Structure formats: structure tokens, C-alpha cells
Image (cartoon, rainbow, N blue to C red):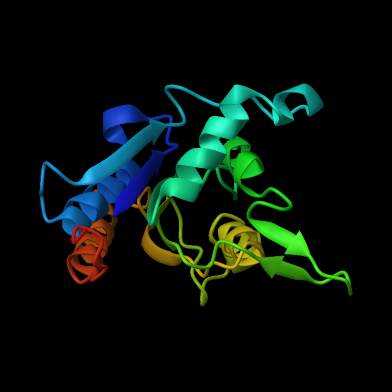
Length: 192
């Protein structure tokens, strides 16, 4: 099986979402060096923002082909200014393609065509934006990704570390809890 591993944080080695996405891939592959993992760093090597000319570019075709070839997609997604980084949005613009990953039915409804894939997203948030938080209405990263992937027939799984900027203790506790959740992941991607 093939894993497509995407990172989108601009903070490099300091990134919580990068650490979590790497841990997810490590867990899924069981540390096997022979595992088929395709890595794309959307911050270091960003896709251009979508334009009409860029829509049919080789860069767009490559991103879509990588997505289509993968069985599992692991995404590191920090929340910046209430949503995902623009680099990740540019990638999503290449993956949500009519006739490829979704189609419109005769009634105008949408049918997702990519439901055979597993998507696991590591989200890192500085504050508290969970279901019971006062800030929930301003959280547009997890909710956007749920909608975008749902549109193409995938229900993503999330590993979330939040409250990372509240204090060092809160950061350590959130990362510890996220790593515990990662340790419990069971997706048979390494067995091919």
C-alpha cells in the first residue's frame, strides 16, 4: 500500500503538526524502511495558487496522480488564522476535481469518487477550539477539511493537539495525548 505524507507547516523543526504527521506515518508503517511513502512538503515546495492556466499544468496533474495512487493520506495541518495554511489549500484545489474525485449526478447532487482512501490529519492549534470551547465558531481547519474530504467521499480521521500556545505544560500535555492517540491507530497500510 502507498502512503502520501503531506506537511504544510511553515515552522520547520518547531512544528507540532510535522512531528505528529511523522509519528502517524511511523506508526502506520511500523518503521519499515521498505514502506511505500511519498512525501510532499507543501511549505518548502509549494504548489502555485490555482489559476485557470495552472489548473491543467503538469504540477496539478502530478498532485492529483499522487493522491489517486495513495491508499492512505497523512496530512500535517496547523491552524493559522482560524483555518488551514494556503499551501494546503492549493493542494486541495488540485485534488477536488470534477470527474476525477467527485461527480455531479443528474439531480445535481454530488457523488464522491475517492471513498476507498484513508485520510488522517494531524491538526495543531495554539488555542482551544474543540467542540465545547468558546472559540469553536472560529475553528475552520478541522471543519473545512471534514467538508472538503467529505465532498469526495472520505471521512477523515483527526489527531488534534490544541492549546499549544497556552503554556509549556499545556503544550506537553496536548502533544502527549496526541501521541497516545497515534499509538492507538490501526490502519493496515504496511501489509502489501
